[in-house]
Length: 323
Ligand code: NAD
Image: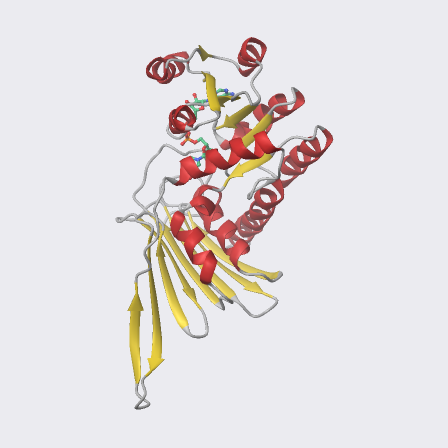
């Protein structure tokens, strides 16, 4: 079968890696990159040996791609995805899928109507540590996550809930197999007009709970998840892809001893896994592991978190004012 012709729209901080990885995937052919910043488009296209474009329309007309990665700022995801999908092109849209749930719903309908693959870039699903943990977890009753790091002015169109918390929300929803029944959240603006720190507590119908803490104004970079089950405690480091499993074992004499295990498994580049999956879904015409319904669900939860943060502000609290 012919190569799947792919392109990348928006080759900034993350999009340049999408473009690079596509050149490394068997069965995919990068046919061009697009950025409204022409200098940026040239600087990414040159080393990869592809043609730069400054508009998606010109790119589609010239190359007739099969599939696109959309890696423009979140506020432009919807308009760019709509153009691609109306032209019958399969899309991988970076997270958060859109700025509003209504836009996500419109893209869902467009994907169904035009029979298109629409994958959402929840990259942590392709993290080897997450995939390995998923193979052996049973029934988590508590998940706690920390996703924190120093301030960078790069992402200015959304706050920390849509930028960072959405990763953890998606992973938690995919691991706790029960209906989400309540959300409680707080947040603070520190360096920007959006929330820079936020904390959310999720409660599920089966009694499971999750506690998510995200910050883009912290000293140390941390990307960690702790999963508590009845008989063990699992820690996942998203960045190093290390897992530790702590549990108590009763010895023959009746004493309880603590055992710590560090499972060994192959570690891979999550972005490469994600894009390989997208290309194979396009090739085989099958639904992706993280589709528009998952992207929309994670967005809905984050919108509810944001609503709570703003309601608290409007109720007279100083939740969104700088500390
Ligand atoms: P960025 O600002 O570094 O890059 C965006 C690029 O898009 C810029 O070069 C800009 O010139 C270009 N652009 C803007 N509008 C355009 C348009 N209409 N057509 C073509 N190009 C356009 O941003 P980034 O950090 O790369 O983030 C991009 C997206 O990726 C955001 O939605 C962000 O949430 C997401 N993201 C996801 C992850 C992840 O872990 N999955 C990590 C970082 C960013």
